[in-house]
Length: 107
Image 1 (cartoon, one colour):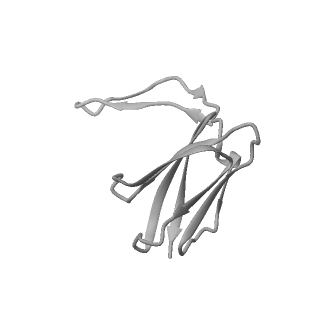
Image 2 (spheres, helix red, strand yellow):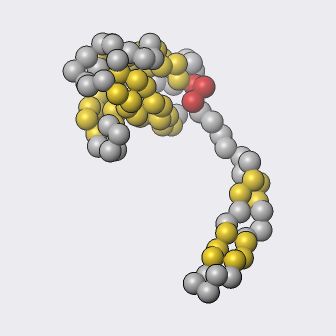
C-alpha cells in the first residue's frame, strides 16, 4: 500500500505530502472464527500452537463492550452468543502474542 496526505487550506489551496509505502502485517490468518454466521456458540481457534487466548471482548455497532470473558491457556475459546440480537458484531481476541479483531454475524 501507498499513503499520502492531502491538505486543503481555508483559501482552497491544496498541498500533498510525499508518498510513502506502508506494509500492513495482517494477523487475521492466525485465528479461525467459526461458524460465521453463528446462532448460539461461536468458536475462536488459534492456528499458532505456541500462543494462547487470554481474553475475548464483543462490541456492538456503536463500539460498546457487550460481553467480556477471560481464558487461561487455551487455543480454542467457546463463546455463547445466544443472548445477542441478530446483527453484525466485532469480536476482539487477545492472545499471548497480540490482538486480533474480526467481524461476525449473529443470526
